[in-house]
Image 1 (tube, rainbow, N blue to C red):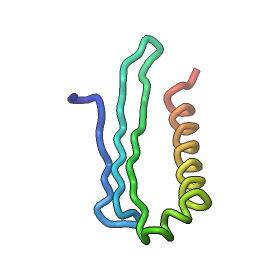
Image 2: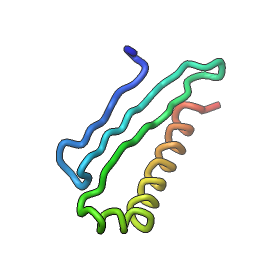
Image 3: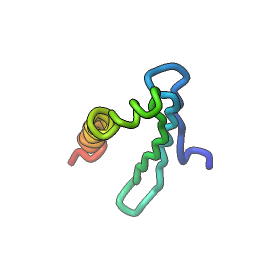
Length: 77
């Protein structure tokens, strides 16, 4: 689907796997942006144990910040 999405993949970094798809869909109101993120934490059980307390809240914070910035930049009135 040319010009409808792009992908970020981590080659080196803190995640065992990081695959982030950015999808764009034209709507009557403008453009809808959808993120699909697949990731695996390192350290097995220990990584899974930290997920709800450290990783998930940080990712939510990052995506909330990005949402606000996209709104500010693209939905100026």
